Length: 476
Image: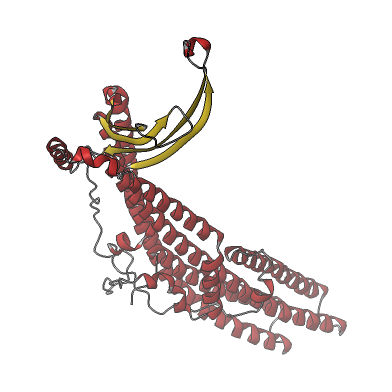
């Protein structure tokens, strides 16, 4: 920009520049202030006597919650998903786009420099030539510069809005990571729970098949009835039908995990067909204090950043009430021949441009009103996101607590039902009870064992849901 120096060195120009510097410290429109949110000191569903926990301020905790389950397969799946998940790649691409837009916005603070050149030949009409030669060579080259004088903060507010959008995109990336880890963990728990329920159903079907064989043998010996055989066969068929349902759940879960890892649905069938026990829930999970959600939940961070961006856009719209000044300049050469940079061919220009569109006050105020409404909607979205975060955590805490009690009772019931089935079969073989009692005890035993596994699975899923609600690993 050396061609501006002769003009800026004058006293008048120096004073003008000082005035511009003073005015550029102003930026119209409201400054963003983080919304005040009233949060309770503790969650309502926190266990009685427990003190609110304190989160460690460590981002690494966000990606290590699954280690608490002590399952290397689960850990491997989530690690691989972070490397290949397509949703995460989309979120990262959106972040890169927001970063590029911020760079573009920041460049608006500096002069825009362009250059151009022409070399050609022009033939004028007879009237245009007015007796001179109609054939005229043309050659010119120039460097052009323009710089918006950001007196009222339009450029700065735009940069501020793009910075907030970038922060929102970064929070979206973290949110996707939380969702991916949570969904893989949830699907994995459903897979292991279905495998366990399939094992229980198969064992029960084997027992009922043995019972059916005993009934048929007794019938052949003249010691039973056809009704006994029909009932035994019906109960076996009913139990065997459950196998297909559990196998379907297992297959669907395997397909879902594979897609979350960025692979074809059938890619992990062999790996996940290897049966493993349902991971145990950590003995103690500290949910921390509700106020920690404001810092940890990425969806809250994204909503806050978008509120910040909407607030900055009010300033952009408000700047439309004032004139938009642009300082422009040009330095170059222009000749009526094919040669450039000849003596006397230099040309230059310094000009101050004024955009008078601010006089269209009605449209400007309409844009300001629209920006105000957008900011109000963003504030409501932020407040709703906070409420939803607290609700998610309260629900997860409640389910985790109640499924724990339910699982304890059902585990005891399953153990007693297994013992009752063994006793009933022994007494039946000894002739102490009839076959109807055996069928009833075995049917109750199957239901009790299946319910125990189902409750254990739902307790594990509640623990995963609590992780998702807390958006990270649990405080220690």
